[in-house]
Image 1 (tube, one colour):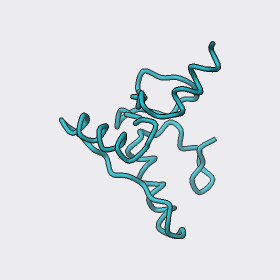
Image 2: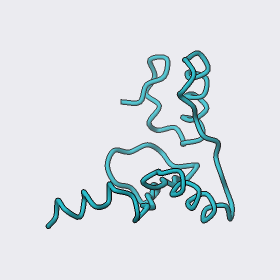
Image 3: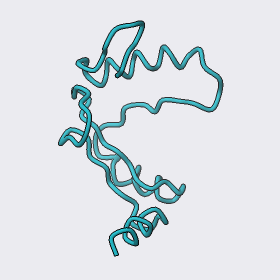
Image 4: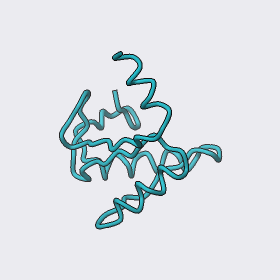
Amino acid sequence: MLVAVGEDIRKLPLSMRKASLTKLLARRVDGIFLSDFEQGEIGPDLFRHACLTGLDGLVSKRKDSRYRAGRSPDWIKVKNRTHPALDRVKDSFS
């Protein structure tokens, strides 16, 4: 369950949940960070950079979406087809 100061925050929009997480992480050690919201036409460049740095993909979320467990049309993952993790997935279905 997503809880902040004892309160269930799953029904809050992503933007508000992220603001709560930012406050929480401000008191944590270095090495954990929260990325900014990126909007507009930067998607292709951001994805290329993610692939070049070795990430297995990116997740895009609607800023106003509520949290819900499982798959959602509001959260979309774009996979790096050259990442080794994709080969492991393919092998598991062979």
